[in-house]
Image (cartoon, rainbow, N blue to C red; front, side):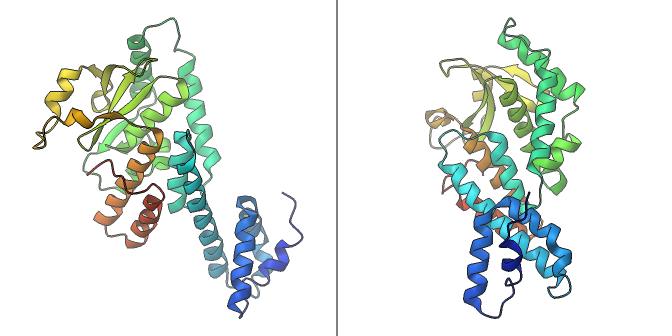
Length: 285
């Protein structure tokens, strides 16, 4: 990126005593976007003699985080956003310097490997069995944190790397790779839970998938038996196929719950800001 000629001038004013000037500088830097934030990091040595490096980096991270919140609002207004984009934006709110492209490339590499073995000539069940074998056996995705207590198993970026996740992040990786390989696997949201369902071209559910048991297929009757008793009547009355936005919201909800449980107040506040971008609807307990 070629350095914007105004960038250095703006940075020299970022700690100006006049609050109106500081606010104007911050807005201008924010409007310059992500590429400018990276350039600011590269220019830090030039300002280290007059601006505290910790303050400088914190300033950049705050700009990045606010920028992520604005992108999450845009994501929520998009009628058909990509699942990967939403999950990585939520993760970036917690880790502002996150390299989203690295994780997009990682998912693409895995899905490309899967696509070599999936085929339109196979049945839905045959393709799903191949998908499950590669996902659970070859790649080694595994549930290791059923109680949702470990941060390293809760961040989708870490799970993409380690292949070890909790009861939310392993399914999210499953949905991610299904989306990239073209398998129509979507969440059926019912009774404050979500169950992966394989749908046909008319949005009819063909069968359900138990991700906790390496993707075994089960029926509607089995799903009804496994649902908790509901005093309000049949929980299926309000069941619906969830969108990718719903999955991203579920990801944010689960992170908010976890950071509250481990008493990481700063991260929980970030997640509360993230959840505000998705409105009031909540999908899990």
